[in-house]
Image (cartoon, rainbow, N blue to C red; front, side):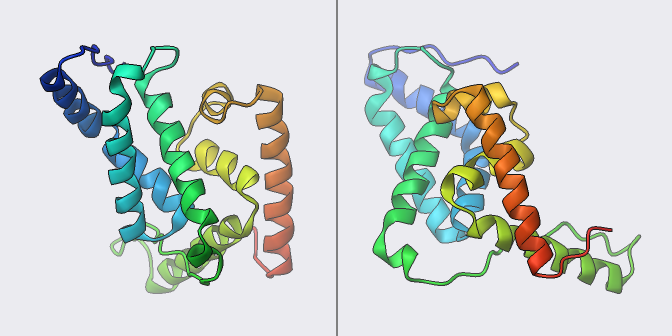
Length: 183
């Protein structure tokens, strides 16, 4: 279990806490942002905004949740803000997530097929409404529990369950419409 940094009111202490939070959660938050926006440059900008916001509000953090939950919430909100922008709504993008390739044990054909499958799934997830995409990404890609998702999203666990179920159904329907093979 990761120990949460202690809060102090001094600026030097806040900088130390921020550095520790960046080291502990930076990569995780970047993965979350990338799954939401599918743009490496934009996700890096979002994470920078997350940590600026974190630094500016460290003294207001009241330990009602963990730093991890707090940073996840900030990240998701920043991603939502980005997706509300006109430029995001009006640009068609292709997801950039690539599967891990193992050229030593898989044939090129298998690697290609796995990459195509992964691209179809990521594209289908990116087309879902935000409330379904959000819980699917946290549950499957971040491997968060329903309780953690509930805390991060500030929704009830039953709402998380219903969104997961509905999101899976919508995803399955979209993939079937695209002719995706489930074997």
